[in-house]
Image (cartoon, rainbow, N blue to C red; front, side):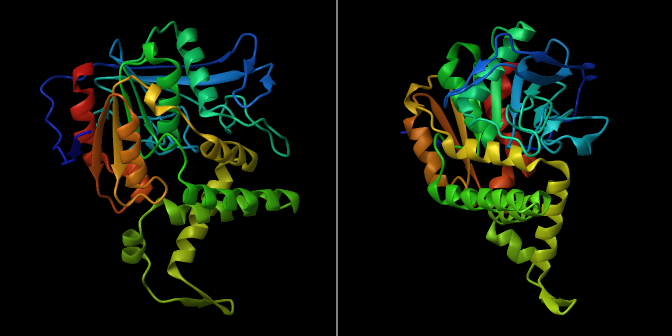
Length: 346
């Protein structure tokens, strides 16, 4: 039986020395010979975009996020263009003064790695395929092994797939708000999102449909407690109809997402979540599994079941009004996790 660690925030320590100079490297390379896919099919030409940021010669850690994440984990010069700006960076829980942080644009997404184009089709992508791409990135960089993979949401699934397929190439997994298989109710919500997007593409309104699908998604990413605290105000009449405060929020988040992402890429990676299944019993890499009590998409029962199936697991649990998005927002609670798990890497 796995022990459960209750996470308590750790106050950041005051630096006692000047931090090492940050080094940034990034590039795009072609996978020689193409890529055979787990669910069938073959991509004859695959380009992969990668980025490393952090202290030169520090331990190399791969950070992977949700399906909207990119290789830009932390940008000290333009923080709002990075997806993990509250967690990764100088002096933050994933401290780029102590680690080099590697990431890549997902296969099938809308970054600079190969993916679908507007109006086009792309084959089904597995988390095993993303793990293979990461292994090819390491080969390209001539890196034998990572000290750790820290993955949240879809990134946690990719981390598990990598740990099963390439155990000799990673020393530690940290899996945040993810499990070894999708939760059926969450799959139901995502399937509705994909149907909305497909209907919009077929009817010539792809951006509107993606905005609506994202709005639906936002209602599952956070907790009921947060929505009650933020959106309990009265409706306002606008152009002859009542409009609730929560509608404004969801519409704004949906429009912002649709302006930055491709509907076809959303379809590809959303499906990849629901096709995800790994053999947890075969993952021998030491794994820290982090669950959030208010997470609607990956309930604590799923996280605990994953920890029970893993041969070498350490389970952390905490509460957050941010629900599933806690892996993006709870910098202090994650500081406690990272301090407990990654401390011996540097």
